[in-house]
Image 1: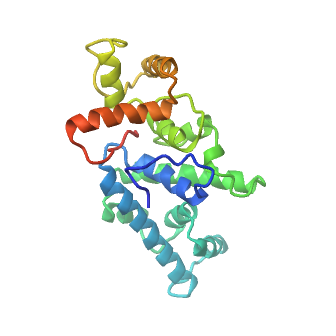
Image 2 (image 1 turned 90 degrees about the vertical axis):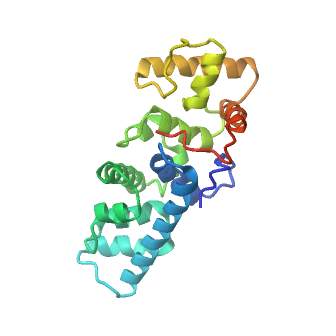
Length: 240
C-alpha cells in the first residue's frame, strides 16, 4: 500500500509494482484525502486480484481468447494488469464497480485507466518487456487522459532523481506569495494557465537552486513548514 506519509519512491530498490500503484494513486488522490485513497486503492487491487484468480480457477469463464490471456496474466497480481482486467471483463460493470469503491468521476477515471493500459501495452508489444513507467517520458505521461501539469510532476518528482519541476499546490503558491515572487492577489490554487504555471514553476526552481535544494526535497520542506502550522498529521494530495 502507498504510505501517504512517505511518497518518496526514488530509490532504485523501489519495486516496479509499487511505482505503478503510485501512478494510479497520483491520479485518484487529486483533491481527496490521501489517508482514505491509499487503503481504498490497495483494497480494490486486492479485490480485482481475487476476482481474476477465481475466474482463472473456473468460478466464471472468460469468453474470448484475449480475456483468457488477461485473466491468466493477472495471477501475478500486478497493478496495471489488474486495471486491464477491470476494463476488459464482462462479468461486472467498471463504472458501477468504481462507484461501489467510492471513486468519483468514474468515466474520467476509466479513460485514465484505459490510456494507462494502452501505453503500458504499447511498450510491452514493442518488445520492451514491461518497460517501467518511471522511464516513460513526461510527454507520454502527460498524454494520458485526466493528467494535468501537477499530477505528472507530482509523480515524476517522487519517482525520479534529478527532476527539475514543481507540483504547484497551495503550500507552494503560499510560499511564493510570501516571498513576493508572484502577485499578492494570486489565487491559492494550481494555475490553470500553462503559461502562468510554468512562470511560477520557474520561480520555485530558481529559489530551490539558490538554496542548493533538490526541488522535490524543497517542496517537502515547504509542505512540512505549513502543515505543522496547520496541525496536519500527514500529507494530503498535491496531485491534480
